[in-house]
Amino acid sequence: MTSPIFVAIDTPELARAQAIAAKVRRHVGGLKLGLEFFCANGRHGVHAMAELGLPIFLDLKLHDIPNTVGKAVQALRPLAPAILTVHAAGGRAMMEDAKAAAPVGTKVVAVTVLTSLDGDDLASIGVAADPHAQVERLAALAREAGLDGLVCSGAEVAAAKRSWHDGFFVVPGVRPAGGASADQKRVMTPRAALDAGASILVVGRPITQAVDPDEAARAIEATL
Ligand code: C5P
Image (cartoon, rainbow, N blue to C red; front, side, top):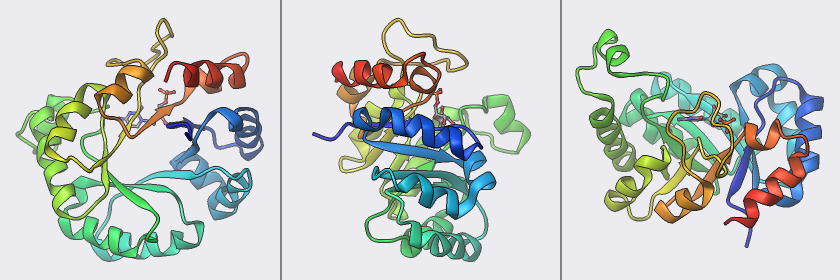
């Protein structure tokens, strides 16, 4: 079985990203590249990372008018990412256009409420709902818009799966038992997140900052 672990390569430096990916490639199922990497290295950087032969998760969290997001996704088509993120808050038409523009094999997944926002932050941008209710609302909208799934925490995945049986659920913020949680507040072990319904797990620092990233990835894989 391919590993459900996507390693979050959160760096703008291509050489460092390539070095990490080369070390862990045998014990992860894919590479997650974010906005910092993409802004620094663009499509060329993504092509360079894809040379390792692992699926690419492009975490760009696109959010703009439907036409712009649709065209952006179209521009990304040659990269054929395995997974691509858009903000559910961009609305139904934006999500529909993103999905329509994506390659058939690309899972377009919705980000609901950023974990950096709390209830007060939502109120300050005019959203009266509490974060939990807002996540549920946006999750339902993403499903109606034909997206493939959601990014959600380990604590939310079981409930999300109950209302979206065939959804694809990306769970970040997982930590091996006894590992440092750093700035992640609601953490779950990789095994528990999979048992709760995660389709893939995003793991960053527990692998990338380890003294031996390959051994760290292997040890996490062994718990699954
Ligand atoms: O290093 P760590 O394992 O905390 O990295 C988690 C990755 O998942 C980062 O790339 C972070 O941006 C991403 N992420 C997250 N929480 C979310 C969505 C994405 O930590 N709700």
